[in-house]
Length: 251
Image 1 (cartoon, one colour):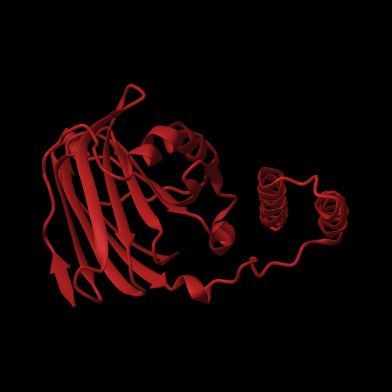
Image 2: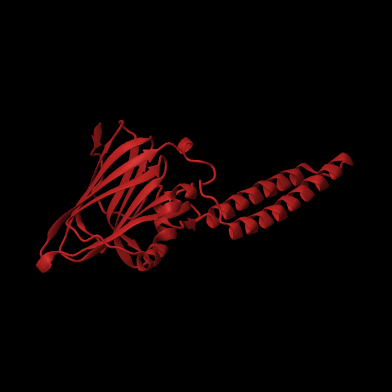
């Protein structure tokens, strides 16, 4: 068990691989805050989540807080990545941001500490390419970086406008990607199942038509390599779209 303390406490403009997450998804997070129930009001917050290795846990706190510190106890050394920023401007809203990406399966203990003398709001979610694993938390938002699944939101307010110290303790149970099924283990209800079969038949028919047409044109020497590549890409894209439709219908 090792505690990684190699963290930055500076507050620069975000310059890291997670930049695109915030710029693309941050406005959508506020929509979730309006429609998602239950707050947690406390000076110390204890949470537990299950995520997949390689996914990115994101914590957003606003207005920005002071003395932000992040520590993580991991099952192996160098088994995770952390980036955090005390004050980052996003769409006119200053926010404190923490990103954690576990790289191996196991149990992680994440500790986020800070202080604030004003009421603040927090959102915790995860960026993933496997939305099926997070279906029980709700319908993930679709972004160009994958899906964003909302896990928790909370709000806290110091008593008598005094500066208070806060600690968020998160237990992360991280599972290997191989442990998650390709399709989420959720059976479609009869109406959705019927609709899914209709869509699947249409997509498969179109794919079959393109492949048969390509076959005959290839026999007479009229099929170019670029056409072959284009049709194969279209078939692959249609199958991926069919999978995404299944995921959304199973939510």
